[in-house]
Image 1 (spheres, rainbow, N blue to C red):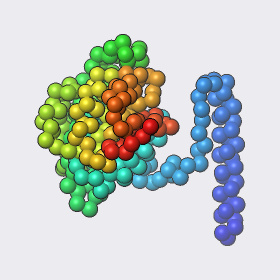
Image 2: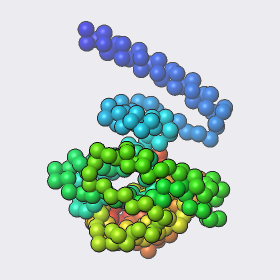
Image 3: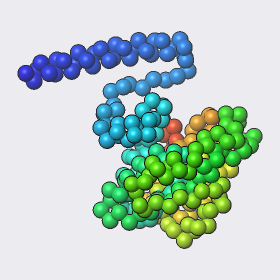
Image 4: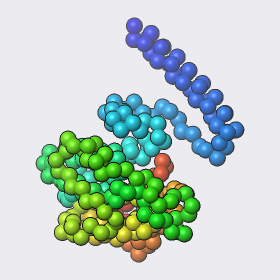
Length: 248
């Protein structure tokens, strides 16, 4: 019986690989600069992660890899003291992941602070290229509030970055996620949160390494130029550093 089950599994895997190879052939013609990755990764089949993607309707928006890594990086901060923060909340999907992780910790004492204009992006500058325009990615505050209604240790701080940062100036942080796409708010976010990250804390910039977000990458690299930490670029986009971890 077990042998038969394995045989069926091998057959299905073979069919998937055949379809995938056909897709890569088509892809080389239609989008020759795109690089495919093998669809045989365990996290593709993680049920909890799949439910999260379905909850927010983001199963096919090409950001699965970054969202998976967000959860993995959070695990590194389980014993780091401090709260969590997000700059650029949008509809609350990534904040949901952060809040769920915070709630899973044995002491569950972290508060998650969220900063967003909820009016979309501020005006890009020449540093940011031409991909974004003012008002892109607007989503009402109420959408994020509803998405996170089951969590209680949350604080929404609507407004343009960095207007409300002073309200958490006395806090320290274990994890900070910045997803604001353009130079100036990324620069202001890393400048504020870097000195408030506890040793072992993680700063994750969702937009790092994207040619559609050159300003965000520049803001991080400029700030870290004279710091012992340097951003590590993730293969699916985004970059992070660990406070106190020296990198070249």
